[in-house]
Length: 376
Image (tube, one colour):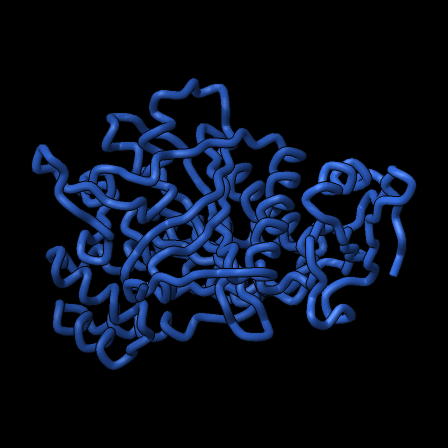
């Protein structure tokens, strides 16, 4: 049978590596005192499309239920967990999850994630813990050739506030910034009434580089208190990472939010060898306003499909074939314990090419009314 576009079967090492990546994530988060949380794979679409979450319905995998409500396969963990955590005591700050999200606008409709959410914690603590958990996890996976990027959603919002853009114009300008289309950024901002702001935004498109760039913008924005606070906050995060031995830090001051609920610091991790994004996240305090609550909230998600591909194959274990029969099967099962930490397979026939399947073949025979083993 054929599969729908975007669906795929998997076998062998690809699955084993992903299991290992999830297992290592569990060990790291347990050690750092995260509590596990899980949400249903099926949710109401409104959980994600309301004005606070702001996600588009079109790429979600959806259907109408028997009551006429639109249901979806979970497209996003953070929004679902925010819904779930409203019912949880505020004494717990750190949560972790692992599982799939489903979207039709990505390569393959299903992608596997592992992630963390930190709520009710001081802003700097939550962001620092998120980033250092990411470092801890990447180190445990033996992924060492990566870059961490810092950005802040409110830089764009602070600079464009005087333009008095309507939602449509603001989104159009945001997308132009996101795609680094400098000419369009300048045109849209200047057409909205300010050539000065247009020039500032156009320069910001290229404000991408090492953390040293923050010193330049600290001087540049010395008369704008809000932008100065943002730059100094990012400097503090970069210094923390540097003090922890992470020196491959990038800053993108022209970055805009790619999910509507981000409202502050944003971060991403890249693999240097191919530029793949291995984790992303940020601050999303405003997401809780839909529940008439206001919390400090920050988190990130790891792309387990990408990270598991970085894992080296598991060390080969000796593979043993117990050549048995229906009559000797029970005896063969008993002697599995004689081969701890080895792969043991029971077969009634031998493979066509013995050397390509097993390191050792042990035949179980009957002699003088007793089962014996004979290595071939």
